[in-house]
Length: 79
Image (cartoon, rainbow, N blue to C red):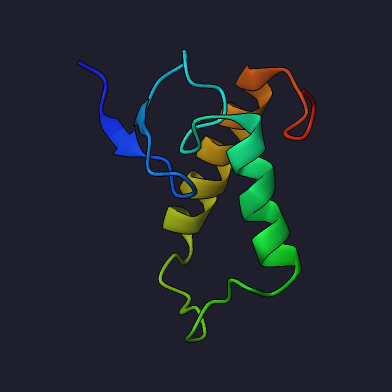
């Protein structure tokens, strides 16, 4: 059974799976609202990120992200 998460923008429930292309957001609109908040610096990371992923772990993570992006077959920002 796919996991359920709340949309970070509007808090609507979203199924984490292929049927939800904007996950963790419920829609393109919520995704773009979040992007706007980051670009206007309304959202920030409060502490510097640590380099927890190093070596083979980092390589595996990068490969996983690249595979996920290749699988989607679409640009992240296309409608």
